[in-house]
Amino acid sequence: MQRAKRQRGLTITGFLFVAAVVIVAALVSFRMIPAYIEYYSVKKALEGALTDARDLSPAEIRRSVERRLNVDYVDSVRASDVEVTKTGNMLMATTAWEKRLHLVGNVSIILEFEATASR
Image (cartoon, rainbow, N blue to C red; front, side, top):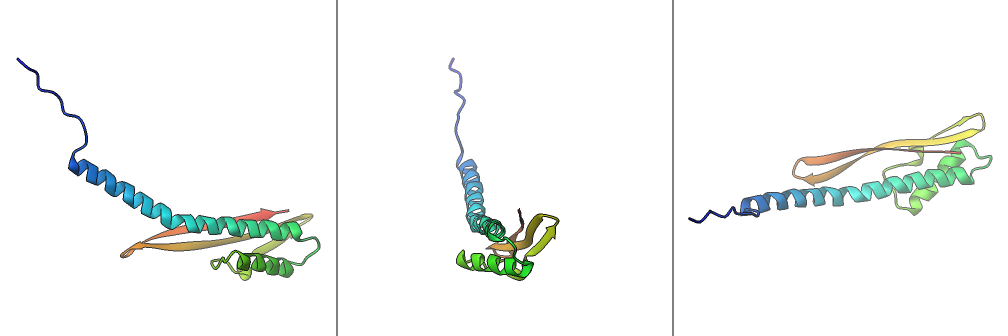
């Protein structure tokens, strides 16, 4: 008497399900990567403007941030969105924004960012 061998492996339905999940995850990841690159550009612009700022007014710091954002082609944040505060000897620049990414149909992703730099 022979025992029935237990089959192993992935059925076509299982394979299609796994492939669909991987494709959706890749689509979402590829759509989000530019938004995170933009976030790091904003953070770098804030840090650079504060590093170069010696005795600049908040308006001059905002202009410096705006120039840096223009160089990096950032359009989600404007200079007027940057809040510059000075507490004693510490200077802080903060901005917050959200980015909406269209996926398919009426499905979108909303990413909320907040970048802060201090000196």
